[in-house]
Length: 131
Image (cartoon, rainbow, N blue to C red):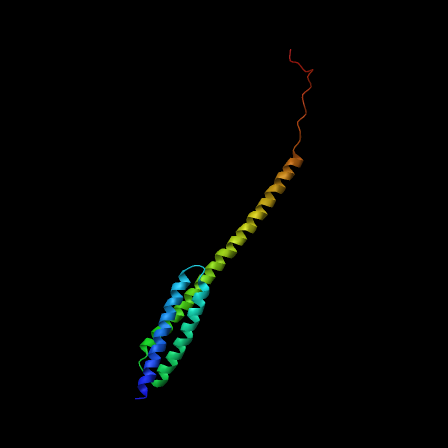
């Protein structure tokens, strides 16, 4: 009779791990809510690890605990992908702005050099006539 509470506790931990893993997946898709995805994903991984350890120690059905671990790790991976892509876009935009600023400076320098080299043509004398 003692195995019954342990079995249900492992299943409850697995189910809660799955729920938090799904929440982390959902929040990782929504921009600007990544902090919630990190929180839910961390909780999911911790609960899933505890559930997997308990299931293997008590030699119970492992499917639910392994599914919980897979979903929580998938949630953490999607969070990492979101942050990687966001930082890549952000830093690429900064690099593009710096490149445009450098290009603009070079163009203005070229224009200034051209203006310095420009020679005013001499006027023809008025006395010349072709008769």
